[in-house]
Length: 178
Image 1 (cartoon, one colour):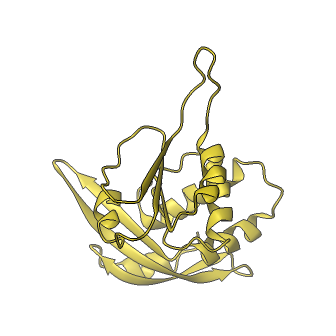
Image 2: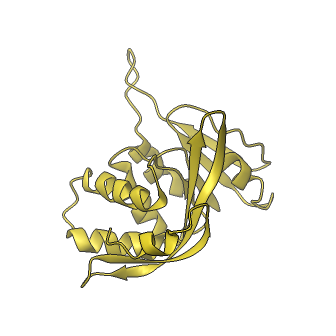
């Protein structure tokens, strides 16, 4: 999905790709690639968190983060809240709503001293679209697309507008507290 979406980025924009392992196949004129590494011999480890923080020094128009797995979610959230719209990333989950829960859990792994509802409010302010890609034997397909409309801290409830769904009960699922 990241590869397909990247083809719609105007070619004059500077794209910065951050990954654990180089898997994203993008060819662009103004492309910068960062890859995390584990500590080896005399070389120290370079984490996704460090690469996200460093990425802003390279004046990217778009940042593509391969996958969110842990505490780097907080750094991504900070990046999104400082005007870097058009950023694309993935998180593994069974639905778009579960991806939000997983993203929230990853932010909490950073041990940041923010209230839970403030984190969820920041997530709602930062994310525009949630696209869930489902996998069935032999194929992958977009199963739902949700537009984030906000977060109600009183109800601890995200508000969405369903844009597309393979499931008929999306309206019901979107009204469930997350």
